[in-house]
Image (cartoon, rainbow, N blue to C red):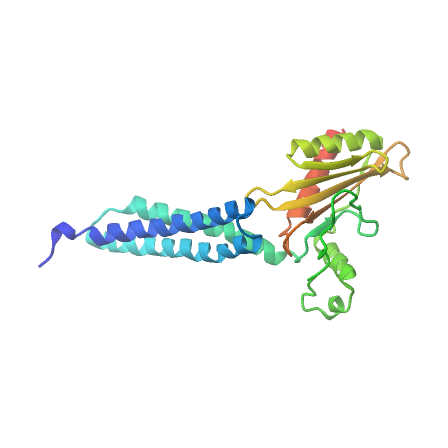
Length: 263
């Protein structure tokens, strides 16, 4: 005997569970980010939570498909619940998937600069003590034979060979002043500005996990163009091994904006 009153119970229940799992996966990631950003737990614990958030959301998406099939066979309409669960899972998986793809396509380094032979140096902010630890050799014998600093430079040139010093026609003092303004407009915490040395040091904070990256901008007279300036920049993550390209992107955008601002 068929219980027509309970005909749609299971499809609807499956749909609700699917939506709860999909949204739950996103919620786990959000809580992990907020907790890391506020210092409730370490960045390692926060990133580790993503290993559970993604499968949770994907399970919700898969269950949404099952619920849609069951509901269709029983003539029960649960399309909007299943659709919401599936779209949530796919968007979340796509976002994390792009991050994972980027991380795997970039070398596991976190220190980026425009001049590797004459690195901009910090005076107020401190470079992390393990900055050159765990520089990967990518299974390549020639990299493994290199000292850590040379290995870092080789990986840097391979991945970020486009990063070069910026040449401007304006004099160094004006460029440094504009660089400080741009940093403050970005919400960076400016730690020091030294007109004599031509340097500005600041800390940038990422959006979700609130990771802090230290930046130094160095402005010197351009020896090839009297009256002009030569701008170098360096950006270092305070934690983690790989920055998944964040520091290089920051340097590119900042120097592009500085060039535009000085025109």
